[in-house]
Length: 254
Image (tube, rainbow, N blue to C red; front, side, top):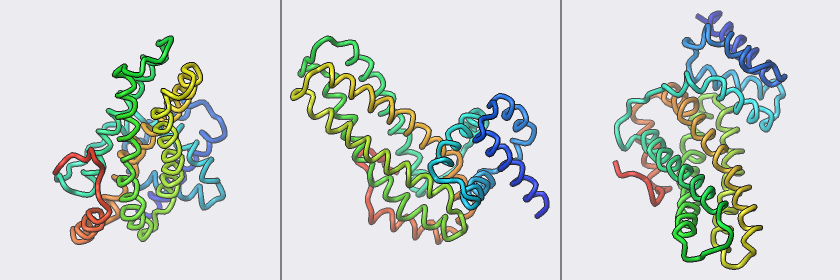
């Protein structure tokens, strides 16, 4: 069993390194499909962690993860987690569903505003933009529950790599969400064409980054947590800590 695990780790790490070295994704994916069905989320997590331990920088691993996720998107996207409403992970995934809908709305609003020739402040598009920006910023309790409750439990069990990458992305997401909110609130106080340019820039940054971030958490990080964090009592204690931190204004009720 140990030999099999080492063999799998070596195979996954080898594929990740080849991606990082610029090898054609299609070639690597074709080879990966032969054993992909046997790869568990926690095995991917530990393989990425070993790359960090081998000297790959968090930023390089983060970029590598994006390519890696694209390679595995079809297969990992079928992951199903059967959890009761109110479970820590169930709540986080439910919040992800809402955030993904907000990102869809943001993309549509940006497209509509980009077609405008002048700012019509009473337009409902700008009201939608402010609503979306406010809700994305108010997702902060979601990140804090991950950083202060979920990630530490993973790290206690030797899973350091994925939480480290997620924390880096959280910081970038915090910054760009604040930028979006500030921009949405200044539409009446700046020239419209520079406004459109800035809106397009921040939208094109936040939408793909946050979508990929959610995909990695739903399909790698959360399943890894469910595998390595054992014991209902641990999850109950985690839920109590999450309750103290609080929830988002859009968190679905259990």
